[in-house]
Image (cartoon, rainbow, N blue to C red):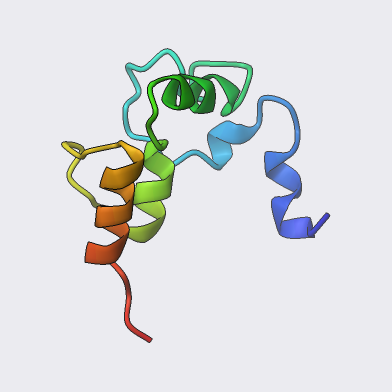
Length: 83
């Protein structure tokens, strides 16, 4: 595995990787020893995309988003970087 990903493969170390700012969420890796798994599982159960996928494109995004798959597609098209 690529060395730059080594820190996110260790159990419970996803808090160094997570970009979520919802620190009240019980699924946030900063509050959970299971890493990203609870967040991803919750989002998938709700047919949503985790916020980190949005933040990869727009780090300072408004938290009031449509987190559905369609909402993510629209967000991606809107924030597509040229180049």
